Length: 155
Ligand SMILES: [Zn+2]
Image 1 (tube, rainbow, N blue to C red):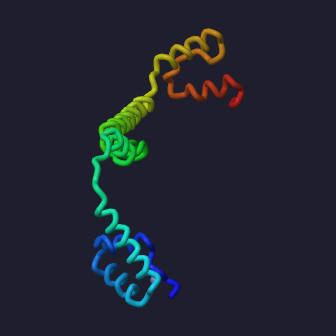
Image 2: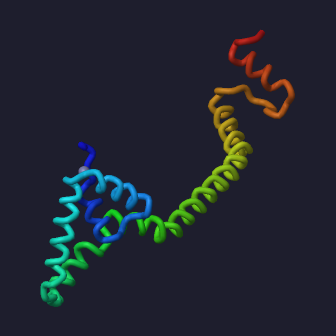
Image 3: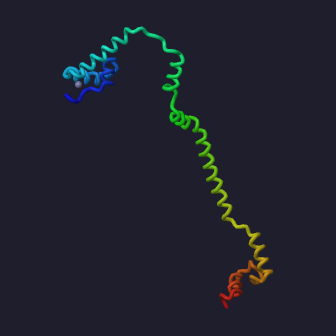
């Protein structure tokens, strides 16, 4: 028999901590395997010897150290917990800020589609004064044609 039961499983079996299915599986193997049966007897023997030893209360300092080492959540766990609980308001705020930014950007883009005529008229007056564009009524319906003639693109 080469598929022996793991020592930790035999330990749990000896403590009565296995599920009924696992317990039946271990029991079935033990009924056929002397090696694992011997292991179980050794474990039970150690438990019996330990049980009769006088018990002493562990020093408070040792208990504190063990609790601190093994019962304090790890840094990674604490970071994950803080993300899960503490960062929810931050995430909600970030989402709201993003939505507000999108709304603001969209709203301002609509405004940018509307051209302001004042700077264009001011520029036109300056170009007209410097003879860069023909004089006359810019609002006239044929101003584009006048421009074309001025630049020699049209006779
Ligand atoms: Zn075995």
